[in-house]
Image (cartoon, rainbow, N blue to C red; front, side, top):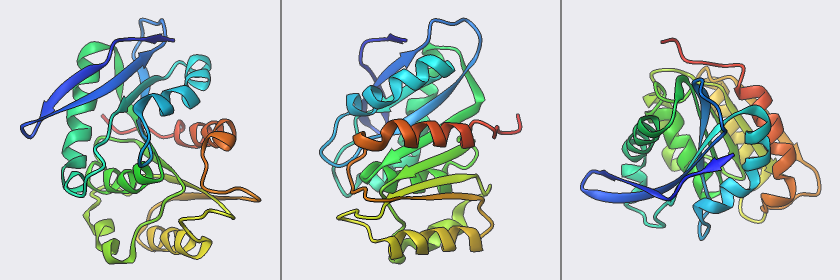
Length: 211
């Protein structure tokens, strides 16, 4: 894998930074936009995805996310800006761009799945759920993309009931959901990242956008 320097892009009048990592290849490659958790760093996501990305020839795009309430409103547009900038720098197959988020990043990944349904071929989420107050976002999706959801049965922040309710909400609105509960696992992502990432990629990589 070749990690380029930190890049930045201006979107909506604000500047956002992101990390870009790409295999040494010349053909158009699939890509994953990786969203870190609250208090985390873009590099955290690259670290846990880089070995799989090297094996599977995947471009990794990891933005540094503001931990601010206003960002949720801006996030879908920012995701578009970041992906477009990455596509200007490396050869990405636009029909095979995916989204994966952890915790806060997972919460935002649900937003991306709904409001950027024509950008991402599929979405993966670890340790997050859709808040009941925001159920209506599922009606915004122009395309019902496949979504893979992973949750530890000892998660300190999200109960199994919350995440099961999210699964039921998505399925009732026509989404194809791969749902996995991890026994004896808490909110931490790194200890199970190899397993989760491999499973998510096996599932999501089978899907592509019609171009």
